[in-house]
Image (cartoon, rainbow, N blue to C red; front, top):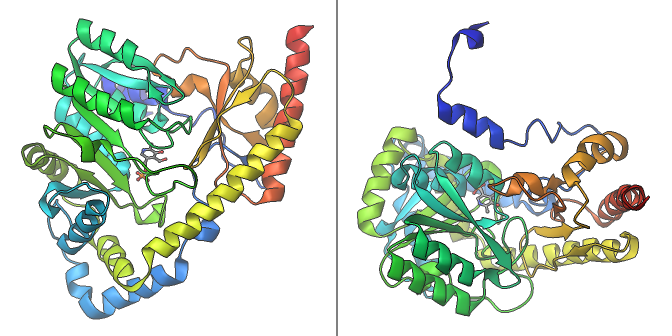
Length: 401
Ligand SMILES: Cc1ncc(COP(=O)(O)O)c(C=O)c1O
């Protein structure tokens, strides 16, 4: 077999170590998965998107099927700039590049900045897909724990004092995996620290519009005073991930370089979905759609919180997110959520979650798990939490025996 004769690049070996594929099996018919960050498919505006596809092909079809450029469809960039301006992020359409999801923004930013061995800060825990993207560039991680209001800035300050950090990666809103929101005071302090220590901040904000409780806060990009924030957004969670369109906002000098990297990666994001989204925004009330998403996810979050309250054994805590898709469940120190998933919960209960081990750059923390409430109806969420609670109760008894 050809693979036996090949020596894979170091980056390939590193990337495969971060994957969840071996851990989380393909879904069988009766498996309930709280693992993926899949939006509720009932909320996809299928008819409106279909109408937009037809309109774009009928009215502008030859252009929509042609090559264009790496920056992406200008009218959509202008629509995004106008939406961002409503929230006091005043940028020009030329400071936006349309990417294949926020995921590509993670890869391009790492490619832009990181040499092998460069020091970067990530939240602990963090988004597994970011670790997968960064791994290829072989950085050295400094994990900063999250407090209830975001990064522990005292610890961050210490790291910045002693190490030359190049990049701070943060998900300030409804953090994946914890659901935590960074407070306004911390956002301001983070910008100050980045200015003081000459660091780039990578703000990953795909859940931005999915706040269903509490007050919305300015993005880091809105607070940026020196053009050091690269900010990522996405239509995946608010329209449909199958469109694969996100965006990256950066200061012009950085964006120019990112554009060259994107040329090399894929020439451009697919034009047809960009034009479809632009058309969708013209012909539909997107704000009303977002309102309905927020209501829907609030109800789902409450279903999961109620089910946890009713069924979980003592000794567990969990976050109560004000938006987004995820909550973070933490058990007694001796609990190993990964072993439990592999040996008990997946094979016997046909239930999936993401164990914390994979969500820390250091892979060190065993006793937490990420649960997504976004995908299912009430009955399925309740059934899934009952299954999980049954396994956790048995495990707690075993640990105490
Ligand atoms: C924090 C975070 N960043 C980026 C992504 C990637 O999203 P996209 O579909 O826009 O590539 C996700 C998806 O789950 C995410 O949770």
